[in-house]
Image 1 (spheres, rainbow, N blue to C red):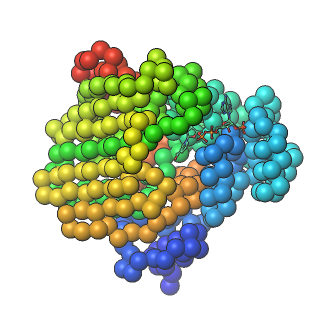
Image 2 (image 1 turned 90 degrees about the vertical axis):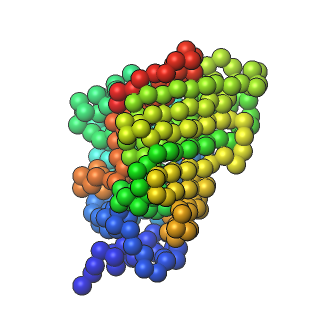
Length: 372
Ligand code: NDP
């Protein structure tokens, strides 16, 4: 008889071609992977054929339940290249002017929006109006008001809205969440999230307030916000924040270079986080409870993710995050699967509400209350 574990083993080995560790057991992972392996295939068009879109397309080649079938792009030469590489028919190729016509295309189920942050809002709403499911990269939008409008549009069109939170399917991350839920760390008291890198080219869209909606917080600090919530397992009720800027030429008004922020949770736990565009090798989560600690370092890169606790190293396989994410998203859309940590629009909106509050706290030097 095929057990769920056999199922999981087959899925993991074939999808990622990585060795599985012996005695592999994690209820959360088995529940997740065991249930996403079979069922209809999600036919996806990627919008925005840039650096991350390219990574997602390549990873999706190994997905069991998601297939790249279309593109939406402003660059005809990229469209040609992608058509040749992924065997994409002309009828599934669109640009930013004509992609509303996708509503008449029965061969596409979902559009994955992987464009600069400030474009997500209008593009996702147009995708919803075309009757297609929307998968949107983080940050879902550039503020909570826009995020809410995207949720409303998708609800009205009766399509799903999912956010590309790939870490929600990562084995080391899920193992720490399991340990915390099972009480192995005791009462959670503290989380630290350090997220940053040194940003290069000063002319890129990430350093434009208009296209990025902000600076490091929108791009990389959001991982610390999101991580604080799924690691502590509560929603924050207040935020304080301090901004520092050492380069006023590169980081113009409204584009944050470095922000430190603190989140307070109902239980009394606190999170202390750093988001920056000025330091490399900053990718660490640390969770401390009354009886134990758990650390991820690196915590949100493409992997391998490494984890340890007071009991020793966390021994879990490396996965290709985007491959698993796309399989899981197919299962969410078609089977109604509920992942351990949600990836829906409401989850994206919570992070946007916190980002709004962090910017306000940094500007006013006040403690800002939060209601998520
Ligand atoms: P890139 O600049 O590499 O690609 C963005 C693409 O968007 C472009 O190549 C272009 O594609 C399209 N585009 C449409 N309008 C514009 C415009 N006005 N300016 C620039 N590009 C435009 O960015 P990334 O791929 O790194 O990031 C895209 C999104 O993905 C962001 O929201 C980012 O936060 C997110 N991301 C998420 C990651 C994750 O791990 N989850 C990692 C990296 C990024 P075309 O020529 O086809 O029109």
